[in-house]
Amino acid sequence: MLELNENIREILRERKLTQKQLAENLGISECSMSRYLKGTRIPVEKDAKKIADYLGVYPKEWFPENTALNEKGDAIPQEVLKPSRQSWEQLRTWPEAVKLLGTTHTLSVQDICQILHAPRTWVNRYILPHVDKVYLPDGRRAGKEINTNWKEVAALQLGKDIQDSTWCSKEDFDNLVMGSIQSVTKQTKLIPAELLVADKKAFAEEYAGFSQKISDLAESLNADPFSPLEKYIELADLKKQQRVCYRRQLSNEGRQILRSNMPSANNPDATKSIPVRLPSVPIEKWIFPEEIKDYAEIEESGHKYFFRNGYIRITLSFIDANGNSVRKTFYVADPETLYHKYVEEYVLISEEVWQMYAIRLMSRR
Image (tube, rainbow, N blue to C red; front, side, top):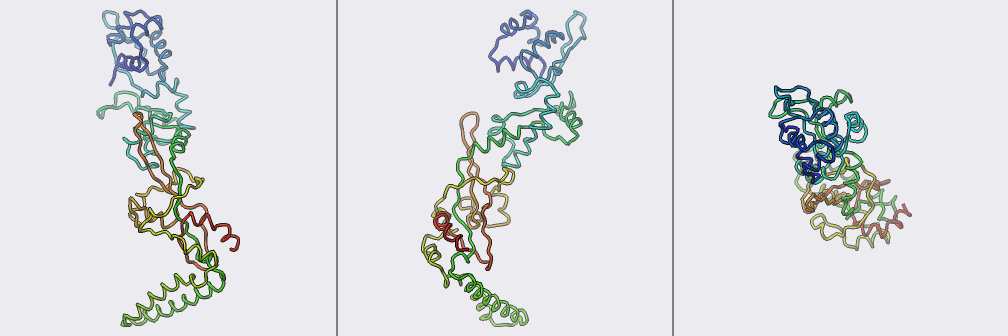
């Protein structure tokens, strides 16, 4: 546990002040200040308040007002709680801290780790230096209770569970993330196949005809487990024909679209990334690629799942105190997802082509 003299020394180093300058500015004798800094004497109440006010320490109550004296008449040295560097510059009183924790500083470091899918060391490096925060020491060191547990005090006053020591301004965090956006792009668009045909009802009838054939054949195969292999091949062919039957009824726009460079998940880099507007989706709802790695095919370089489903890609660039940058990528679903009216069959086209034909296709829907 750091003693008061060490606390003062640390602040002086941050402020680039000397012991003599501090004594002169506060009207305290240099001899007394020297004793304070050597740890041989704890400031009396008057001097403690001067130091607290001058250095902006939060709260003043953390500077002990020791009245116990030894045989020589000097205050008995005692250990004090050391607030974080950020706290010294932010707050003056405990009520202020509690007010912030209940209103604006509602995001813990653990919350940020979960939102950004990053370890605590990463958050400490790239996030915490850029946001306002409140620090709540737990009064423990090496497993021993040595001072007030301010997390517990705050939890009792606010009536909620407080597990983390550092709580950040939600507004600052949101602004930091939004200000770190490097690009918002989209490569593909998933559209109903019916948008590409000239006669939607005729397409729906043909599609339904395939559905009936597939259903009848599947029923017969289920009834006879010894059906020949050719029947299973026939069933697979019927399903394939159904998926592409829209190609026989294409409109002029549909033909032009299919003649363009159609996107391929096997080569996503060949499809141009188009800048788009950032959707109104809370940061907490952004999808980190690793979240779905166990549920869908996804490669770190290609992000196939998001490519095949027309997701929007958000690239962030965070900078640490030394000017080093690191990128993070998130995805959000297309807020303008198109749903079928007649046939539940979809076609993946490039976002670039969609923007060229969107008005004409939607006008005939």
